[in-house]
Each structure stands twice: as structure tokens, then as C-alpha cells.
Length: 220
Image (cartoon, rainbow, N blue to C red; front, side, top):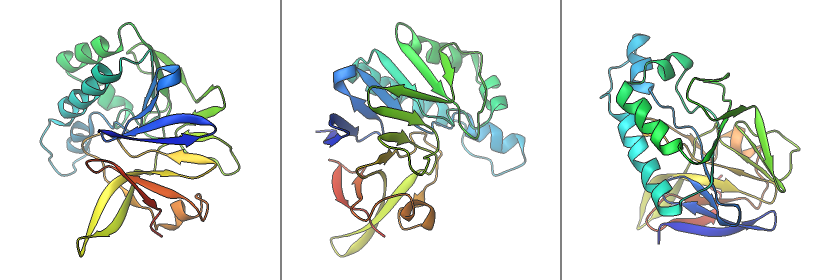
């Protein structure tokens, strides 16, 4: 089992262990916050030098999900690249690989705060996207209903076997789903942070990216 099925807005969705969201009825795979090119961007700006393998690692996992689910539509919920210069700096090999993954599918790039604006990789570029009752955008908007978003890279700390364990997670309530970051070099914001606690209802839950994924009350 590599996912956790749950109902949202009357729809059956599956939170995959990879951090992707699968909507089988519409053949939609959604991923958020790939942050491709983060190591290049950090080196360019004089930050810590990270091993330059995160693009390859992220695309390996994305290819695995695409192979397993064969979606007709892929939605990338913003911050797909660490900035626009990082997109331009992708190697020819990585650009060709990404183009191969996109081929034959409807591919929607949602604009994020790191990568606002189109990039020259094809696909459709939108600020938000609506499909059926669901609204897809990068950053959650208070008051929005049936919304799928990313941006915050949520993670949750839980007590297991007498020790604290922190895992990336989906946050869910009756109004929204906030997705974990999919990219390899991405940190996270604890679910008890005020920014997330203020967005999620008292009955919110967290789906931890464990093996298998586990749903628990959202740690506050």
C-alpha cells in the first residue's frame, strides 16, 4: 500500500506516500513545490553548497508516480522551480527528461511565489485552476471552499514508540487540503505553526508520509 484514500468535497482522493495526490475518477495527479534547481540557486546566491542531484532524484520519484498511475492530467501547484533562473539552468538532460514526462499529457503549471510567470517548457501556465468542485492554487486563501494548495510544506511531529517522529504530511479538513512539498531539497513548516493552525479547522487531520501513510488528528 503506497497511499491513503480519503473523501474530500464528495470525491475519492488518494494521498500517495511520495507526496503526490491522485484523483482517479478524473485521472489527475497533483504535485506541489518541486523546487527543481534549488542546489543551483543556492550556489548562485552564495548559499550552502548542496549536492547537485535533487533534480534527478525528484524526477525519478515523479516518473515512478506517472508510471504507476498513468494520469491524463498533471497539475504542478507552484514553486515547481526554485526560481526562474533555476528553470533556465536545467541541464539539457534534465530538460529532455522533463519533456518526456510531459509528453502526451495535459500538464498544468500553477504559478508559485518562487516561479511566477511562464517558463519555456510547454504545458499550460495558470494562476489557479478549477476542475469539478476543486480549486487548485499555490497558496491557500481563507474563505475558499474545496481548495487544494501547497506552499507551506507541512510536516507533523507525532509520538511513536516513545519517541517523537517528524514526517511531511497532507493537512485536510472539510474546506481544504494543503499538500506536502514533493521536491527533494525542501524543508517544512510544523503543523502547530500559527500560519497552519489558523488555516485549518479544529477537526483537521494530518496524513503522514510514512510507510504506509497514516492519518492522525492534526498536531497543534
